[in-house]
Length: 196
View 1 (tube, rainbow, N blue to C red):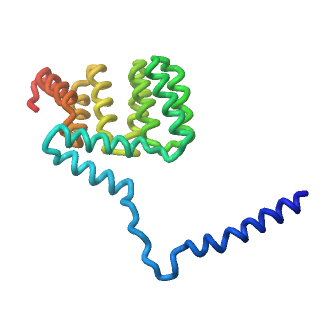
View 2 (cartoon, one colour):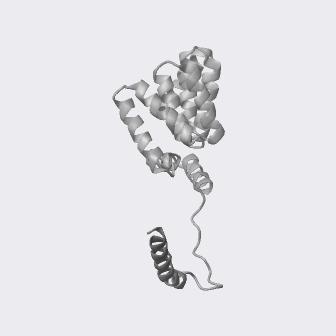
């Protein structure tokens, strides 16, 4: 029986291959232009973000950057991230952390797994764990303005105004349109006697 199934599989493959070969580009054909790499797309979007003339243009660039960061390339990771978002929305942080632990284990190079877990740690006042995850985020994506704002928020909550100011300044250098971060930075600088 196994031999018959194997023979059938081989005959189907042989029947399909000639048409697949015919559909391939002929020798010497010029391949279509490749899509820009993820890094090139991000570089372009960050340049647009810095030069945005208005809030609408800035928001469009921010959203496009975040959309790229959210691309996991894995249906499993996408499903787990959806479940974690639902758990966070329901304030079931223990469940969210359990799910996000799986995300960072399965795909340790996925920046948003680390970032989302850092957020949950922040929401549960586990600042050292949140900082550790933010460090992972910034290794994977040094321009992650959201992680830098989160880091600033943690330092502010801990009373470390100097480090909070530095984190907010870094975030604003990447995305000058973070109005809430700019407001908090202004308050911190006023409190510490620094000017913006």
